[in-house]
Length: 111
Length: 409
Image (cartoon, rainbow over all chains, first blue to last red; front, top):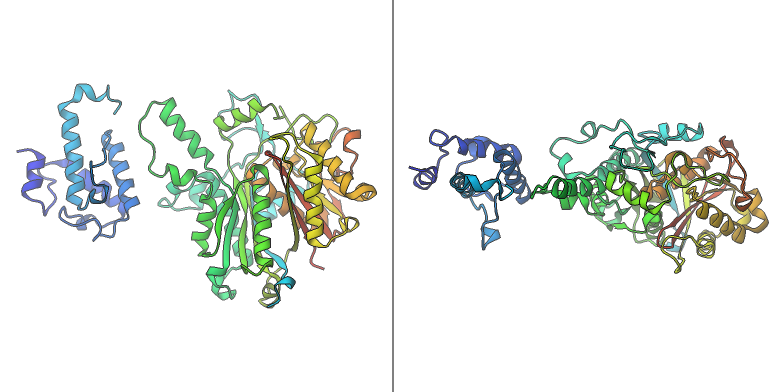
């Protein structure tokens, strides 16, 4: 079972046990947004947590720096980007997994 | 209210530059004729032809701003805020409301403060290191209105807030417009001035290429002058409507009485005596001052061959025989050319001269130049009472701005 499947199955709770990357991502989000780590449940809307869009952007930047990846915009609908904490985590994990599959090409892509 | 009678008081002063991180330190050093121009220390100077600058040394941003706010602040905004805090502490230590001000009638108008350091390091990351990723706050750090916006946010000033762009006259234009807005009745209080922190390898190479930088010192009006030296810093004024300042018992450092501006409409870099003279005359007329009433002029005085002789010619044109009785000093000899902050720092030195009856000298002066036949207060400060003074800024692009100031009689 992949990390993404776990997230899809249990959208309500963090899954540090299954995938340590989730914990790392949420730690960074907590630090950048100054939201209590315990409140960062995957199903919570970022709006409801009062996370300013700039703080979320800073969090994405720090996640990129930490994992040495580039997180593309979610195509099509920027307003809907990272509506929930889970959507952000999901997106990051999928980028990381894609990077792992294409590891030999990652360096060439300048990531 | 009769707006024609409205006067403008200078009630707050703040500054940070090569000679000090606050006004008292800076003013002591200026009076002592100390030189803030030194070998460049904050950046690698190996690739620069001119290796001296008037840098702010020992500035620890983290001592002034918390870790959350710092990523939003280019050095230009940091310096502006440090100076603005000093000015506001002096003028309105208990805030707007206690002083009887409505936020909507208070402005923040600063000279354009481009985040050059952010620009330079972003391009280094992008082109030098080949990274494809810049910091998310790159744009809000670079934008020239950032210092003005930060000042507005920090002090809750909700009236007009913008940045003026006229190269080395930017902060003079900012102060002049602020003065006009208070005098006209549009505003009651404005935080105004300018900041500059452009000493980066990229920007200094640009100045190198222009061939106007002195290899060592800035010697305005001296026959052996060799060009200008870049400096950095900030100076911020709190300007208030006079009557209200009096009624609330504010300390008044001086009065802003006139503002003149002009364009040479001739050349992008070469100065023009007629354009400069026009701005000086406009400031005098605006202030209802006769030329003979002026005691002191803080010159633009860059230390380039062309500026100093053109500025002298402009003074001769306006002041005639009185030119010989004027004290004319260039504090750029000590603070360097602080570009967008230059006009505000020099207006600050002018106000302090009026307040304390001491003129800061032109240092580095070695030899009289027949083309600069003025009393440039060489090398030693002068104690003399001053009733009225001008602060000149003549910028690239042929943009001239002159402030007229009076002592509090």
